Amino acid sequence: MSTLPLTVRRAIELMGLYFLGMIIIVGKDVITPLVMAFFLSIMLLPLHRFFLRRKFPETLSIFISLLFLVTVMGLLIWFFSSQISNLVSDFPAIKRNVQAHISSIGRWIDTKTGFSTAQQTKLINDQNEKVLNYAGNMLGGAASSVSGILVFIGLLPIYIFLLLFYKNLLLRFIFLWFPKDTHTNLEDVMKETEVIIKSYLVGLLIQITYITILLGGILFLFGIKHAILIGAIFAVLNLIPYVGALVGNLIGVVLTISSTQEILPIFIVLGTIAFVQFLDNNILMPKIVGSKVKINALATIVGVIIAGALAGVSGMFLSLPMIAVLKVVFDRTTNLKQWGVLLGDERPARSPMQWPVLRSGNRKVREKLEVENNVQPTKKGDEKDI
Image (cartoon, rainbow, N blue to C red; front, side, top):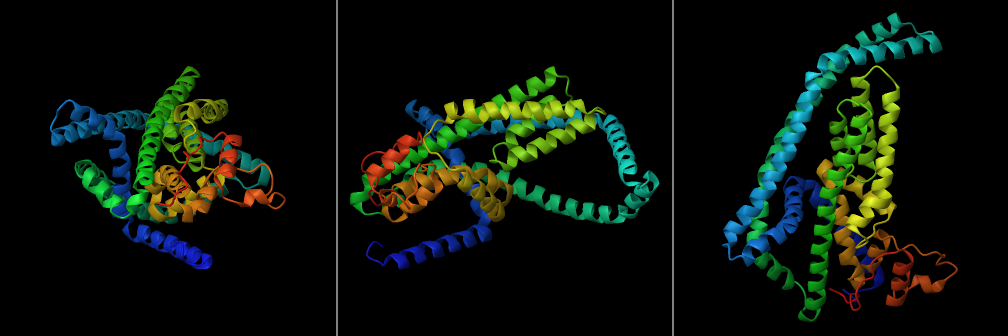
């Protein structure tokens, strides 16, 4: 690869990206649960190794680790189902509140535009048939989505069990792909990837917990109905960078509007979410996850959008850990190092147009940029090709 002309190498890289995208689109129903199972199996590795050190049989150790995961997931499902059941039980009050808000909006429109409430009602009734047809199509799509989710959930434990059981075989398969003189560097890359995935996923679990408690608790103290549900929904959606926070805000406003006829609670919800998000982004999350890998905001947003287009909502959730893993690999691969620069947050303070030294990819320049941007430096020798 290194003997090929530069233009040929770049063309091969772009073709590889194209074919990789096509493979993901065609095989996303198989690839997405497999990637999710890979991340979860990495997170279960410490528990699995703990039981192996206690002389548990390997199969039993994997089974106990899976049982722990299933128990946690079951508790989460129970929590959300109980909160949603409370929301459903308030449906009569929700209906009255929504009608009151619609009436207020109708009167405001009548005052500002002269479009009377009777005309508004007639327009709404004329659109009822279209709305019902659209709702029917949505329900049909939701039914297929539910079946897809059930298949996804059913495959996850099987994939996790097999990945843990055959982990040594898979590691041997990876090492056989590379020359022997690169195995030390390859081992470092795999160890760092494991650390990053574990710290990221454990950090996300902690993040979901404290955002749910903090946001839900503050809203509860303000007397907001369904405060814990709003906190939990926002905490889960916040896992999708940028986009999830926006959707979480909208859902919080909708739940608040449906629970009261007043306007003040809406501003309380928005203000509390903004406060909690500020604490999360600037104080809590950086201390929990640390600075192992920093991804710039542009790469994050584009990655989320591309992952959503390729693999749907599950792809959006998986986008950030996948980008982090790719950056670790790119930074330690000579032929792909420029892609690691594109994904990273090691932003030069000066322009490479005026400072030619910033155009080079040597180790000293990279280490200086990492220090300037508070990024954990890579180890010496990591620039070797793998």
